Image 1 (cartoon, rainbow, N blue to C red):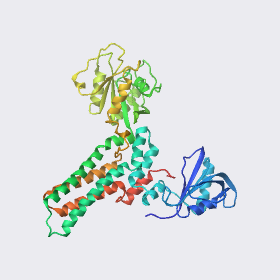
Image 2: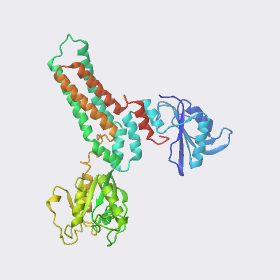
Image 3: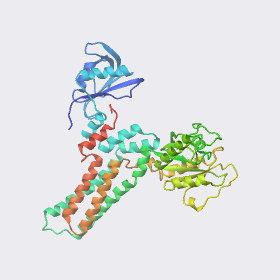
Image 4: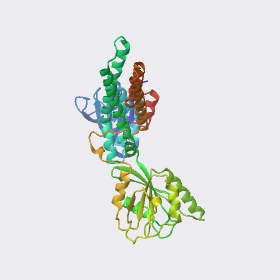
Length: 454
């Protein structure tokens, strides 16, 4: 339930900074703002104009000096009256300003409540609201571009086109149900089939974008696996372009999993350097190997590193056995040395990259192979790029496609009542994505993931 009271929160991150912002939104925003901010300029508060002055307590004591801006509805983020106070960015001063706003009648905003009001007031749909958080949490340029496309309504536009077409289908079918004395003609049936098929194709295209959209948004985990001294830590350092892991000639140096996040051509990658896998009687080393196998089993991609200057041995074959059901990229290290390895048929079908962590040969190609394992192209650079990136979207659109496929089958048998039900339910599933038919508990969950003040 939407309670139209006035809310307030600190909108800038906690900590010291140049500026801190306290945001107030609601019918009483202007009154509350005027109670705690004293303008030093003639003319008072004008909408969408910055004003310089002092921030005061109820007793008239000065807390700080700064600026404010009043944004009258509906020309604001929430489509309500919004009053922002810009003070010095300290932890204490921003908290004191917020306390004055609450004392003057505002309620402390819940996480994401400003954006939730923007959604409830029709300024944005649910897809665009979710994109706001994706923009904030973007780790790479590609993820940011995808989130911005969604925030600007590119994905909403695609879904709205499909929704409007299906609404026309539902209206036509229901009209024939209401007037059964008029037989539905074959050309009309074919038009309905075409419209439904086109909608299925459009939704299916969006569904195929899910894997790519999800990895751009959330990133992927890539584990480096291999026997001791194959060059795992050296590879981690080469990909990071810094000396992150200790590299020695002694086998078994890495006991724990070393994690680092890097950006590979716009793809957020969490690299995992794991312990060398071999038979050992050392209890501590075995614990490290067990941890390595666990992390390898859960990685999105495994870089199986081999020493190409030596023949395969039982440790290499054991690692292959442990990783054979995973998404594997074989990396043959030490290309600067004479080749002594022979690749048996059990490695057939795996992509292979030769590298040298000493000279850097092949590292750029390896980066491209890692990127290509998850991202098919550079479509995200297009202004028209639209991709779904959340399980909620995928499940709802998958359900919609299934319902529409059922409606096609029913239409072939002239079962118009079933067609109408399936199309309406498909529209309901689509509405869950845009927020038109999303249950309140789902809305609460979506906005609870936001930070306070956004």
